[in-house]
Length: 423
Ligand code: GLY
Image (cartoon, rainbow, N blue to C red; front, side, top):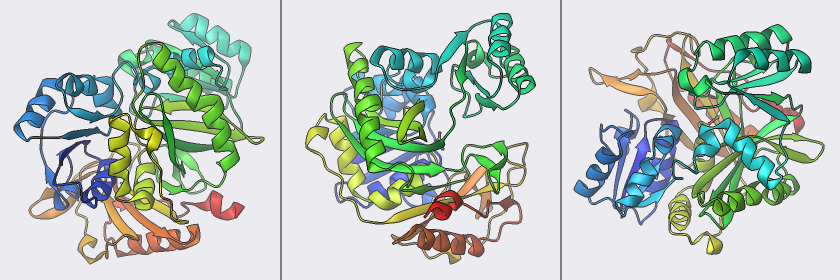
C-alpha cells in the first residue's frame, strides 16, 4: 500500500515512524515533511493546502491512503478534495473539522447533545463583550472563534487581562479568526487529552495523554504549543474515560451524523477533570502535538490498521492491543520560543543517539544546511522514550537530551512532574 501523510512536524514524524513498521506499508511519503522525516522515508515539497495539488500528487504517485496530520489542511477541505477524487482518506471533512476550526460551533454542538462543558457567550463586537466580561469578572476564558495556531485562547486570571485580550482580538490580533470571540466560564481542575478514533458511527478510544503548555519549569511563563507530554494520563482514569465516551464523545458523534456532517478521523477531546468527571474544554480534529509522539511510541505499527479501519468504516470490529507501558516526550525548542527566535542554529549529537522501540528522536522543526541538521522552527526536537514506568520513560528521555549538543536550544527539566508527584 502506498501512503501519503500530510504535515511537517513531530506528530507526522511519529505517525510515519509507526506506520512504516507495518508490513502493509510499501511506499511512504510525507509532504512536506522535515529533515528528520527525510531520513525515514520519502518527502515531497507540495502545497498541502491546495486540494488540486494534493489530488494530482496522489494520482501521479499511485497513493492508496491519505492521512491528514494538521488542522489547517482539514479546515481547508483537503479531505473533501481527496475523497471526491476517490482516495481513501483519514481525517474529517471541512464541515466536520469545524469542531476545531470554530469554538462557537463546538459550543453549539455541546448545547445540542447535552455534553458537559463550561457556560459561555459569543460576541462579534467589543463593547458588549467588555460589558459581559466586566459583569462576570475573572478568572475567565477568552477564545478567538477560529484557528489561531494554538495562540487564540487566553485564560485571564484578572479583569484587566481579560479586557486586554478582548481588545487585542477585536483589534485583529488573529485576523478573521478573532472576528467572533467566545467567552467561557473558567473551569478549575486538571486538564488531560483523550484520543478517540471514529468512522462517523463507531468510536474507539486509543489513549490518553497530558502535555505541558507553559514554557517554563513548574508550569510558568507563556503558553506554547506544548513542551512535553506523557501517556497514559493517570488523572484520566478508566471510569472518567468511560463517562466521557458516554456523555461527550458519543453524543457529539451522533449529533454530527444527525446534521449530515459525520465526523471521521481522530477526535481529540481536551477534558478538564474535577470531582471524578471530565468536562469538555475543546475539541481538536487531529492528533495532538506532542501527544502523538507518546501515543505512537505505545501503539506502534498497529496504528495503520486502526487508521485504515477508521477510513473504511470498520471501527466496530477494531481493537487496540495495549502493552502495560508508559511513554514520555521532551520538546527541545529554539532559544526565545515562544517569543521571537532565530532559525538556523546547528544541532549536533543526533547521530550518537541510539534509536529503537524504546527511544526515538522525532523531528518537529528541522532542516538541512551544508549537510548539517539545523533548527528550522520554534519547537524542534521531540526526544521520546518508553518504559515500564513513567519514571523509567522519563529517565530514558532525559538521557537522550544529554546527548544533544545544541547551544541554540532549550527544554523544560520537569516533564512528567505532575503524574510522578501523584504516583
Ligand atoms: N498539544 C496541544 C495540541 O496539539 O493542540
